[in-house]
Image 1 (tube, rainbow, N blue to C red):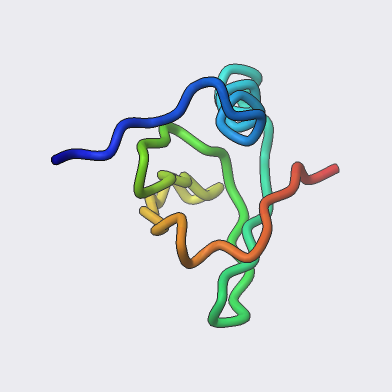
Image 2: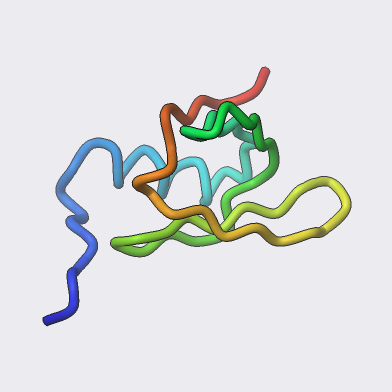
Length: 71
């Protein structure tokens, strides 16, 4: 059974807003790595991030420690 994205959750709505507004974000991963770029899409398991080189990275949600907009 496939997991569905819970669109009623505040975190999901915030990410959708960041996608719509094309805001740059910073992701801290459980490995300690810091990844920055714009979120292109999200699903129940992953978030797709595109950096300033147009390089796409897919990050598993379970690997994210935090996500915050860059200023």
